[in-house]
Image (tube, rainbow, N blue to C red):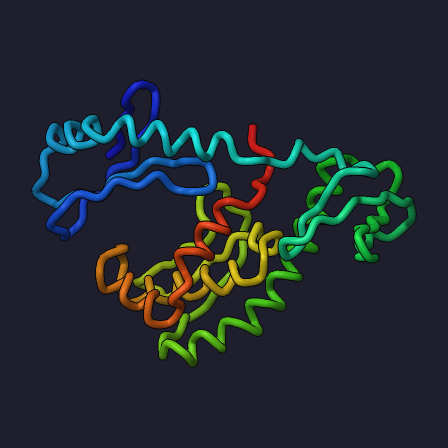
Length: 232
Protein backbone atom coordinates (compact mmCIF):
# COMPACT_ATOMS: atom_id res chain seq x y z
CA UNK A 1 0.00 0.00 0.00
CA UNK A 2 1.15 3.54 -0.68
CA UNK A 3 -0.19 6.95 0.27
CA UNK A 4 0.42 10.27 -1.43
CA UNK A 5 -0.05 13.31 0.82
CA UNK A 6 0.62 16.79 -0.57
CA UNK A 7 2.61 15.23 -3.39
CA UNK A 8 4.84 13.17 -1.09
CA UNK A 9 4.67 9.36 -1.60
CA UNK A 10 4.55 7.33 1.60
CA UNK A 11 5.21 3.60 1.67
CA UNK A 12 2.94 1.71 4.08
CA UNK A 13 3.91 -1.69 5.48
CA UNK A 14 1.49 -3.57 7.75
CA UNK A 15 3.18 -5.84 10.29
CA UNK A 16 2.46 -7.83 13.43
CA UNK A 17 3.18 -4.87 15.73
CA UNK A 18 1.20 -2.92 18.33
CA UNK A 19 2.03 0.68 17.41
CA UNK A 20 2.62 2.72 14.27
CA UNK A 21 6.08 3.99 13.41
CA UNK A 22 6.90 6.72 10.90
CA UNK A 23 10.31 6.96 9.19
CA UNK A 24 12.03 9.44 6.88
CA UNK A 25 14.95 7.42 5.60
CA UNK A 26 18.35 8.31 4.17
CA UNK A 27 19.85 9.09 1.83
CA UNK A 28 17.00 10.79 -0.09
CA UNK A 29 14.27 11.28 2.50
CA UNK A 30 12.06 8.34 1.51
CA UNK A 31 9.00 8.22 3.80
CA UNK A 32 7.56 4.99 5.17
CA UNK A 33 5.19 3.96 7.93
CA UNK A 34 4.86 0.62 9.72
CA UNK A 35 1.37 -0.14 11.03
CA UNK A 36 -0.45 -2.98 12.84
CA UNK A 37 -2.10 -5.55 10.58
CA UNK A 38 -5.61 -4.62 11.72
CA UNK A 39 -5.16 -0.85 11.30
CA UNK A 40 -7.46 0.71 8.72
CA UNK A 41 -6.05 2.73 5.83
CA UNK A 42 -8.00 5.77 7.03
CA UNK A 43 -6.44 5.56 10.52
CA UNK A 44 -2.96 5.26 9.01
CA UNK A 45 -3.53 8.35 6.86
CA UNK A 46 -4.82 10.33 9.86
CA UNK A 47 -1.71 9.35 11.83
CA UNK A 48 0.63 10.45 9.05
CA UNK A 49 -1.18 13.76 8.63
CA UNK A 50 -0.73 14.56 12.35
CA UNK A 51 3.04 14.13 11.86
CA UNK A 52 3.27 15.83 8.49
CA UNK A 53 5.06 18.99 9.61
CA UNK A 54 7.77 16.77 11.11
CA UNK A 55 7.95 14.78 7.86
CA UNK A 56 8.48 17.96 5.82
CA UNK A 57 11.25 19.14 8.15
CA UNK A 58 13.07 15.79 7.89
CA UNK A 59 12.80 15.75 4.08
CA UNK A 60 14.20 19.30 3.99
CA UNK A 61 17.25 18.15 5.93
CA UNK A 62 18.03 15.55 3.27
CA UNK A 63 17.38 18.06 0.47
CA UNK A 64 19.87 20.47 2.05
CA UNK A 65 22.64 17.89 2.45
CA UNK A 66 25.70 18.47 0.28
CA UNK A 67 25.74 16.36 -2.88
CA UNK A 68 28.39 15.79 -5.45
CA UNK A 69 27.80 17.35 -8.85
CA UNK A 70 26.80 15.14 -11.75
CA UNK A 71 29.78 13.08 -12.84
CA UNK A 72 31.53 13.91 -16.12
CA UNK A 73 34.83 12.26 -15.11
CA UNK A 74 37.11 15.13 -16.00
CA UNK A 75 40.18 16.40 -14.14
CA UNK A 76 39.36 18.46 -11.07
CA UNK A 77 36.28 16.53 -9.96
CA UNK A 78 36.35 14.87 -6.55
CA UNK A 79 36.02 11.26 -5.49
CA UNK A 80 35.39 10.13 -1.93
CA UNK A 81 37.10 6.93 -0.85
CA UNK A 82 36.63 5.73 2.74
CA UNK A 83 35.62 9.25 3.71
CA UNK A 84 38.68 10.96 2.25
CA UNK A 85 38.40 13.42 -0.61
CA UNK A 86 40.56 12.87 -3.69
CA UNK A 87 40.93 15.11 -6.73
CA UNK A 88 40.42 13.33 -10.02
CA UNK A 89 43.26 13.45 -12.53
CA UNK A 90 42.41 12.08 -15.97
CA UNK A 91 45.06 10.44 -18.12
CA UNK A 92 44.59 8.57 -21.39
CA UNK A 93 45.73 5.05 -22.17
CA UNK A 94 44.66 1.68 -23.55
CA UNK A 95 43.74 0.07 -20.21
CA UNK A 96 41.36 1.50 -17.58
CA UNK A 97 43.17 1.97 -14.26
CA UNK A 98 42.45 3.97 -11.10
CA UNK A 99 45.36 4.65 -8.75
CA UNK A 100 45.42 6.75 -5.57
CA UNK A 101 48.42 9.03 -5.11
CA UNK A 102 48.41 11.34 -2.08
CA UNK A 103 45.34 13.53 -2.57
CA UNK A 104 44.85 12.53 -6.22
CA UNK A 105 42.83 9.76 -7.84
CA UNK A 106 44.58 9.15 -11.15
CA UNK A 107 42.11 7.65 -13.62
CA UNK A 108 43.60 6.30 -16.83
CA UNK A 109 40.94 5.66 -19.46
CA UNK A 110 40.49 5.46 -23.21
CA UNK A 111 40.17 8.95 -24.67
CA UNK A 112 37.03 8.09 -26.62
CA UNK A 113 35.23 6.57 -23.61
CA UNK A 114 31.94 8.15 -22.54
CA UNK A 115 31.09 9.47 -19.08
CA UNK A 116 28.81 6.47 -18.63
CA UNK A 117 31.59 4.02 -19.46
CA UNK A 118 33.94 5.79 -17.04
CA UNK A 119 31.25 5.72 -14.35
CA UNK A 120 30.74 1.98 -14.84
CA UNK A 121 34.46 1.36 -14.46
CA UNK A 122 34.72 3.46 -11.29
CA UNK A 123 31.67 1.74 -9.77
CA UNK A 124 33.27 -1.66 -10.33
CA UNK A 125 36.46 -0.30 -8.78
CA UNK A 126 34.44 0.73 -5.71
CA UNK A 127 32.83 -2.72 -5.69
CA UNK A 128 36.22 -4.48 -5.49
CA UNK A 129 37.31 -2.11 -2.72
CA UNK A 130 34.13 -2.71 -0.73
CA UNK A 131 34.23 -6.48 -1.15
CA UNK A 132 37.74 -6.66 0.31
CA UNK A 133 36.60 -4.82 3.43
CA UNK A 134 33.39 -6.84 3.81
CA UNK A 135 35.37 -10.07 3.54
CA UNK A 136 37.57 -8.77 6.36
CA UNK A 137 34.92 -7.25 8.63
CA UNK A 138 31.86 -9.48 8.25
CA UNK A 139 33.50 -12.53 9.90
CA UNK A 140 34.63 -10.24 12.75
CA UNK A 141 31.06 -9.12 13.48
CA UNK A 142 29.62 -12.59 12.96
CA UNK A 143 32.00 -13.83 15.66
CA UNK A 144 31.13 -10.95 18.01
CA UNK A 145 27.36 -11.36 17.63
CA UNK A 146 27.05 -15.08 16.98
CA UNK A 147 24.89 -14.18 13.96
CA UNK A 148 25.80 -15.54 10.55
CA UNK A 149 24.73 -14.40 7.08
CA UNK A 150 24.07 -17.15 4.55
CA UNK A 151 25.53 -14.93 1.85
CA UNK A 152 26.06 -11.34 0.82
CA UNK A 153 26.39 -9.18 -2.26
CA UNK A 154 26.93 -5.55 -3.21
CA UNK A 155 24.81 -3.31 -5.39
CA UNK A 156 24.29 0.38 -6.05
CA UNK A 157 21.32 1.64 -4.05
CA UNK A 158 19.90 5.15 -3.68
CA UNK A 159 17.58 4.67 -0.69
CA UNK A 160 19.29 2.19 1.63
CA UNK A 161 22.81 1.59 2.93
CA UNK A 162 22.07 -2.09 3.32
CA UNK A 163 19.24 -4.59 3.34
CA UNK A 164 18.71 -8.21 4.28
CA UNK A 165 16.35 -11.04 3.48
CA UNK A 166 15.39 -12.78 6.72
CA UNK A 167 14.07 -15.85 4.89
CA UNK A 168 17.28 -16.50 2.95
CA UNK A 169 19.71 -14.94 5.42
CA UNK A 170 21.31 -12.93 2.63
CA UNK A 171 22.62 -9.37 3.05
CA UNK A 172 23.09 -6.65 0.42
CA UNK A 173 25.51 -3.74 0.89
CA UNK A 174 25.33 -0.40 -0.93
CA UNK A 175 28.35 0.31 -3.14
CA UNK A 176 28.35 3.88 -1.82
CA UNK A 177 29.66 2.59 1.52
CA UNK A 178 33.14 2.47 -0.03
CA UNK A 179 32.93 6.27 -0.16
CA UNK A 180 32.12 6.67 3.53
CA UNK A 181 34.37 6.56 6.59
CA UNK A 182 35.31 2.96 7.55
CA UNK A 183 33.26 2.80 10.75
CA UNK A 184 30.12 3.39 8.67
CA UNK A 185 30.59 0.02 6.96
CA UNK A 186 30.97 -1.70 10.33
CA UNK A 187 27.76 -0.03 11.53
CA UNK A 188 25.83 -1.25 8.47
CA UNK A 189 27.26 -4.78 8.82
CA UNK A 190 26.10 -4.96 12.43
CA UNK A 191 22.75 -3.35 11.58
CA UNK A 192 21.97 -5.95 8.91
CA UNK A 193 23.20 -8.88 11.02
CA UNK A 194 20.81 -7.83 13.78
CA UNK A 195 18.00 -7.71 11.24
CA UNK A 196 18.58 -11.40 10.51
CA UNK A 197 16.91 -12.16 13.85
CA UNK A 198 14.84 -9.01 14.35
CA UNK A 199 13.07 -7.54 11.34
CA UNK A 200 11.86 -4.28 12.90
CA UNK A 201 13.67 -1.49 14.72
CA UNK A 202 12.04 -2.38 18.02
CA UNK A 203 13.46 -2.46 21.55
CA UNK A 204 15.08 -5.84 21.00
CA UNK A 205 16.88 -4.56 17.90
CA UNK A 206 18.04 -1.41 19.71
CA UNK A 207 19.26 -3.47 22.68
CA UNK A 208 21.38 -5.59 20.33
CA UNK A 209 22.86 -2.53 18.66
CA UNK A 210 23.59 -0.94 22.06
CA UNK A 211 25.23 -4.14 23.28
CA UNK A 212 27.60 -4.61 20.36
CA UNK A 213 28.19 -1.00 19.28
CA UNK A 214 27.36 1.56 21.99
CA UNK A 215 28.29 4.48 19.68
CA UNK A 216 26.07 3.32 16.78
CA UNK A 217 23.79 6.38 16.94
CA UNK A 218 26.71 8.75 16.44
CA UNK A 219 28.08 6.64 13.57
CA UNK A 220 24.63 6.51 11.95
CA UNK A 221 24.35 10.30 12.17
CA UNK A 222 27.84 10.68 10.65
CA UNK A 223 26.96 8.30 7.80
CA UNK A 224 23.77 10.14 6.95
CA UNK A 225 25.52 13.50 7.19
CA UNK A 226 28.31 12.79 4.71
CA UNK A 227 28.28 14.03 1.13
CA UNK A 228 25.77 12.14 -1.02
CA UNK A 229 25.90 11.14 -4.65
CA UNK A 230 24.36 13.31 -7.34
CA UNK A 231 20.66 12.57 -7.86
CA UNK A 232 18.35 13.87 -10.58
